[in-house]
Amino acid sequence: MKSTITGWGKCSPQSVMTNDDLAKFIDTSDEWIKQRTGIEERRYCHVNNSDMASVAGQHAVACAGLTPEDIDVIILATCTPDSLIPSAAAHVQKKMGAINASVYDINAACAGFVYAMEQGKAFIESGLYKKALVIGSEHITWLLDWSDRGTAVLFGDGAGAVVIEESTDESEGEIYSFVNGLSSEKLEILEVPNFGSAMDRFKPDEAAKIRWTFEGPEIFKSGVRAMSNASKEVVQKSGLKEEDIDIVIPHQANLRIIEGLEKALGFPNSKMIKKVHRYGNTSAASIPLALVDAIEEGEIKGGETAIFTAVGAGLSWGACALKLKQDLKPKNTSNAKLSDFNGTAIDTIMKAIKYQIPEKLEQI
Image (tube, helix red, strand yellow):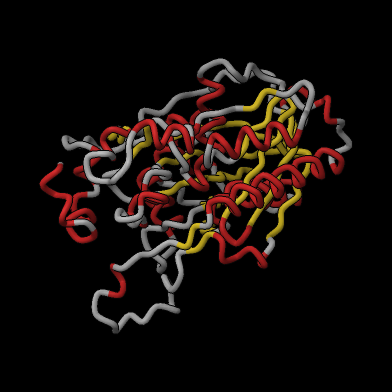
């Protein structure tokens, strides 16, 4: 049995935070951010992560010509769940009305979507389930330390999703193979330490003091190396050649990392999909967001042989080789959307600003 992507969808919050907006309360500038990251803007969400995930999921399900009741399993890749008990995926099931689906979260940080896709493929090809919904969704702005410009300027919120089903015809495409793993000797280069059961929850205000460990140069080197190695290995594992690859959709962390990966891979006929300027780093949501945008904007025409690759905290990494279906016209559409929000992107994080950097309030 073979599997393929039959539907796709996204949720992009309406509140846009530009670099100039960030410069109102962070010691930075549009030029400083663009030169180092390539990011021009990002989206901030005013509701819970599961709201974004359910909207993206509904669009993907409709695109595949299905209803939420048709879905057998929902796999939600996220490191920013609404709650630990129950899973964020449980909230997604309720909001979507996917009453027949088993559901769960996985956390492989920014590599989560590739990990989740591998599980979706395994479910379908084993015959255990017929229709899997794989979602990458992050409300990562909730987790940021706004006093740290090195990390605060990088991230945004969003969600993307795909439906995976059996493929019975070459025109329907095929998910070929995966190479996923983790290099724990690099665990400390990107970490939000003591934010779990390791945290002393009885220490005053400890839960609100979020600090990131972020070693930028090492993340750049390790990220490019991990994604390059995984991508080349998955090409070989799939029985493909490097010249067969039409598109590469990498984790959208930083334009310099994407360009470094493009140089390291050297695939002669491939186009590198780049959407980081629009969304920033949306962690597990970045690959499906880029996929949907590239389809909607005509960068992806249908029938392409593609590589998805990502690297995240842990140091988790992975790659997927697949062929997209030839006909990318959605079978149906959904009117699902987030609730309206009358404020600005800054308004969505105002509570955090008041707590973390109160001295900046007068500048806003």
